[in-house]
Image 1 (tube, rainbow, N blue to C red):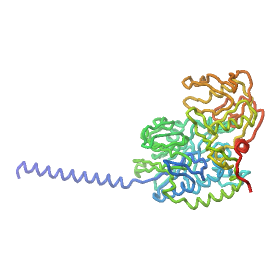
Image 2: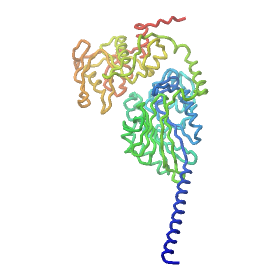
Image 3: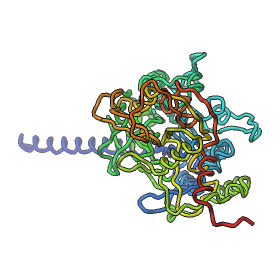
Length: 523
């Protein structure tokens, strides 16, 4: 054989060997990918006890416990390796079917869904720390009797008991699914420090979210956990294509340990499905009108998440049949509510919306402000928009409608405040980059949002056009929530309560009965 033939033969053999080796590598790679563990996470946030209320998404009806349950059950059936999670505010600001029963129905519903793991949001604190613990851990309430509590595992890495310095809930939880250990860490927004009433704030403190997450991640890494998911009741948003991500959770993502792969958000009631700093951030609106589906591919050898993908799935009514088990459950509580919820209080000639206009004013909030000012016989009234959760539709208004719109059990109080204290309260509408506009009656305010925080109020005039005098005392109607410094309006705490009034619900009911009486004749 000639030298040229030998070289040619050797080249052919080399190519065959390399080709065979490449095929082996490709086969191993394909084989390895086929052996990745497929895990599905189904996530919810900001349900707010909306068990029997429906929403509109993209022009279609969505939401309601019976439809959310149908979707969750359907998707669980499609993947045996599924965990159901939530990112807080499951209760609080709830309609009567939940709130009239201390929000126990919502916890029962989450038990029906077999939610695996969750974290508290700021509204879980609405009735105090003790009541939050009772709902989750079980206990007795004088209105509802004994309650077994939640089946869900709760975690929070940044809610600390002030007296003991210990965590209120475990800072992390580990769930094993198909041989894979997945670490979950819960956190709640530090804005909770503003939203929680002072008496509850004395019990707990909410620490920095990023620091708390990274401390918990370090512990999980020491335990060998490499698949880590954050349940964050912290706001996030993106467009429907996953572009232009923003809000607090997006700002935090680059500061969070890179071992974290998935972050479920909440709090802002918006849509998010975006990747930031190689971390997948999802948030599925609110009120059960959508849920997050996150599909993970996990390498069983390294325990690492090697692929992640998410969809935000609206709970459209026209695409699924409602869950019958949940319908039976809802009917039980509807029967318990009785006829009281259906009592017609008034009849409004047009819809009164809670939505703010371009000037930041809400027609419904304005109506409430005028109502409590008149009923408490004060010069001025202030209403915080966050206490109003639904609009009033045209036509008959029932007690259920009022409890849905005003679910927080707030009462009206009459304060004495100086002109300076009123101005100080108005300055607290802006805290850093956050705006929280008060609705008001009896005063006209001129402000400059371009001025530094704390010096934006240019003038405050009474209804006669006179500038408020700094040292003069004025009578002011507010909710007891605002009077206690709620929503960060600590200036109201300096006022003296000189009269206690009705609940906000009863105040509005009285207004409707007087101004817009119903034509319905009671039998």
